[in-house]
Length: 342
Ligand code: HEM
Image (cartoon, rainbow, N blue to C red; front, side):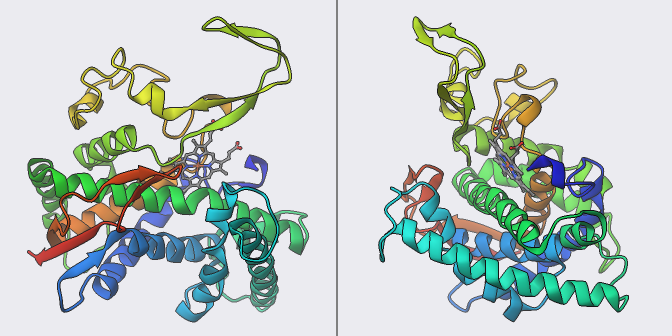
């Protein structure tokens, strides 16, 4: 999957996306967080923000109607990924298979439309992934649509879940919210009216990113990944033969008191200075297969946090709303907040 992500996810590339992420976070909050009853459900809203952004940055799609044609079938894919693979009508697996077919058909249309635009010289400087793949790779339409779906799946639930758990902890700990607010207001005050965030602004959001990291430590959005043993090895008295599959988990490492003393405590200062020891904080994995979307996710989350805290104060409408794991963290009611504008 990495091989086709030419320049799109290189660490220096996402800086070009920061102004777009900032504007879209602003528009999103103005549109979806301004209901008359002052309440919002964070998880579905975060899903819209991250999906709209992915459509824009992966495929140069800006029209809401075109985005919904993809988001409706896409919504059925994620629940099917971890379901029992029984392909009969009504099962989550079947809905995911059908959703996959619909979204593939829509994507083929998107690809053909973009090809025609490129041929006409429209939007020549667009930096989205699809434009790059069409200009630079040998892939056919089906390969491009499969790769795009893969990237949407890898990026969507992970980032929307992270935004939701970050907001959850900000609502739970007002002192942490206040420090994030101060940091973000300093950045906001340094901008001219209407000026968008830059990559340099993002580099100043150190405390906010520590808060996001601590949120991912306690509620990791991805639970781990499979690996195949390349040779026999023994771990904790168990021998794993060559060729067997092993699943490494994020959760157990993040809750190990040897690496994170008082592990249940929400404490962003763990990430100050040199931070946790190597390979102990692993929400994005580690080593050669580490998530290539880490920087994209960081920018997307911080652009959202900036716009959120500089616009709203908030509290949980249900202070006892529980987090369960399915396998990603899920707030029982999608995290219902009561908002107050600054
Ligand atoms: C907070 C958000 C995210 C988290 C927590 C996360 C976490 C992970 C983890 C744990 C892996 C497996 C790493 C391993 O096998 O060692 C992974 C793989 C991957 N992620 Fe992410 N991810 C996030 C966002 C993204 C985004 C935004 C993108 C794309 C824009 C992305 C693209 C990928 C891809 C393509 C892979 C497969 C890499 C490979 O097989 O070599 N991820 N991610």
